[in-house]
Image 1 (tube, rainbow over the protein chains, first blue to last red):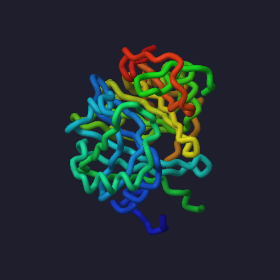
Image 2 (image 1 turned 45 degrees about the horizontal axis):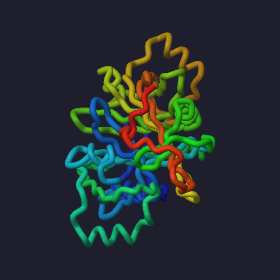
Image 3 (image 1 turned 135 degrees about the vertical axis):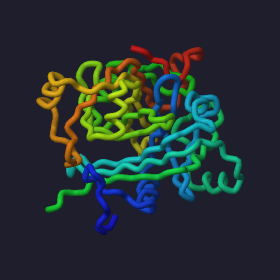
Image 4 (image 1 turned 30 degrees about the vertical axis):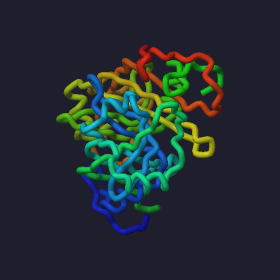
Length: 145
Length: 159
């Protein structure tokens, strides 16, 4: 993270460019996905990978998440916070969830991650988010820092 | 988050009790609010307070405020993880978001730290009345579960 000046939004948050968004979102192990559930959104953490400006994560076949997401709008959010300096960033991907049908990409993904954290007895499948929009914000450190 | 025996769900995740879920909300400085605008789910991180079965957070004008004005159902989530043990947990709650009235606002202001993002106009409080609260934790040990509830859906713990 260099100190080039980024534009601020109306809440005085830095507006992150695409490259910074992808770098930051890929630098943390956990992200959260939001999908429209019955009546209200569902938000669940996933171990994710950022690859080719897409986000991928694994889901147990037949899980509630799995049932809710296919071919529907999905949002993936990654963030990181520093309590001491009260700074942090958040990056949001908006798009559509798809199962992975690209063996080449699957091979690359498998090489990037270890086995899933959740030791599910059910098969895990890759979900890839076809991203329509990426946006990110950062709370800048105080000006006199 | 103690290690007493928990029931497990179909994915072999420990099912957290309501008390454990509320304690996890209190212990997390940052939560995330999920809401829907025009069919698109959104997630925003918030710096929250809990008051009984309500969570409250400040917001500037924007999508969160609009969701609250519409008294919509929103999700509230906190999570944590430990890379070394590959363990983690999450708590998900659902509730109706509303704008805090004057009395609630002064009550919240008295308890709150100043907002993080030194933004202008972060002065409206949104209150979410929690209805369903459920929590899951990845069991660190991998022995077979003590009890397995094979019939219940993944996340249907209700208060």
